[in-house]
Image 1 (cartoon, rainbow, N blue to C red):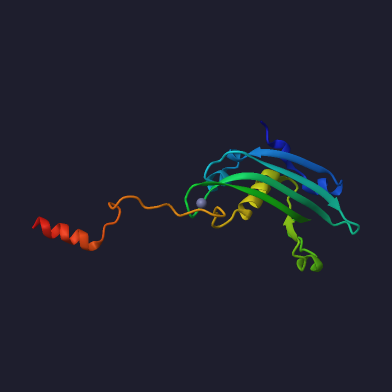
Image 2 (tube, helix red, strand yellow; image 1 turned 60 degrees about the vertical axis):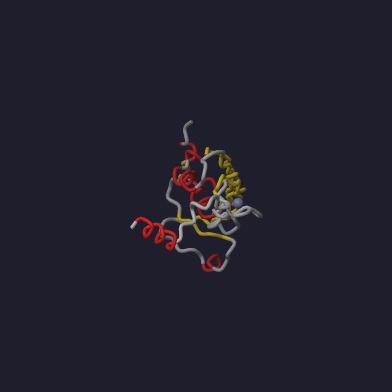
Length: 164
Ligand SMILES: [Zn+2]
């Protein structure tokens, strides 16, 4: 499947107030695929363009995916529902964001080249949203089984002495 239709002029999309929806298999997003436990499922996304009264260009980005991460407590797999909603102010390369937007935490400024790879942008946003330490809401750490794993220095010493 060609992904070229997701390399677009994002400013034009915003100017026209257009919307673009798409989805991509997790396995096709290389960096994300390496960050999850199993690169299964798809990432669903939508870009809604908007031009405000002052001519500023925005896109509202929505991303949804069920990602399989490794729980850092029990080490089993867990499905983490990823939901990202982000409002981006589009800037030309080198353009400074307006003062009032710098103070607005709800909006991120994004410098866009004439063509933007939406899949790379989606991947960046998902990577940023990943929990640092994913954990099930309730689970137990794995139980260490058997006495074999428990080797104390003294036990080793006793064994050594026994051999002499
Ligand atoms: Zn767990």
